Length: 336
Ligand SMILES: Cc1cc2nc3c(=O)[nH]c(=O)nc-3n(C[C@H](O)[C@H](O)[C@H](O)COP(=O)(O)O)c2cc1C
Image: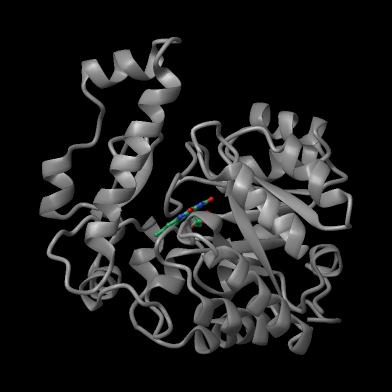
């Protein structure tokens, strides 16, 4: 337990205020188990398990592992947009298996919150501004994940230095977890000073030994600098961060006028969104796993600070050590 992250740790039943963020095509069981062993909250997107029976089988194994590793816990990310054709089925599996923690993204969390609260599970919502946060708050979410500029995946437009205090000011009773650009203990402490209880970390865990993406992708994370990260709306319709490889340049960064027209036309926008997302998923799938020649790699600006490929256990141990050292450096005593 830590003094500054206590509220989040108690609520989520973990020992250290870090979430291993959900990552499409990247999160896997070995990473989740390493996170649980290390006492953090390890999460994954339901969309990584789309084949019949896959998600149910994984949830059984995670529940069994979680029973043996009570210092950490696990959770699932559900995309709650209407365009997620798997949502109803995945939510039903999660309720059935009593998943302890949910992260919702890109929509209204109402259905998930209501279902989760019936058996005491907690729901945090990814938010990038106050308007979306208000919708989540009104639907009784338990906390927020403030997704700031430069985050891997669907990054927000606002800096954490503004988004985190703004969320605390508007919703003082809800814990805030900061996401975007954090790789180390100093990053964790810095957002706690802003009012966040903890952090959600994605990109750093791609360059881990447990991660099953191609070596080319991992090496690109290690070699890239912050200016190599660009945003594209071509993959999902929403701005998403990727490494600016030749494949990314060829894909382009903005939807063309026909795509924009279809995305905004009330009669077809839902179907067009589904089409864009399925097409984007396929493109990413062709890039991420070993033996693929495409280079469409999602990553945030924290690549600048990632210089090695090490185990998840080491990544988390380094964060803990640096966090405690930083507290000593600024002369904060007490429970660290
Ligand atoms: C490769 C990759 C895939 C991601 N996939 C998802 C996803 O499926 N659902 C989601 O809510 N967020 C997703 N994210 C965002 C992360 O959950 C998290 O918000 C983000 O990684 C935090 O920023 P950081 O990468 O700078 O640590 C993804 C991020 C990355 C890097």
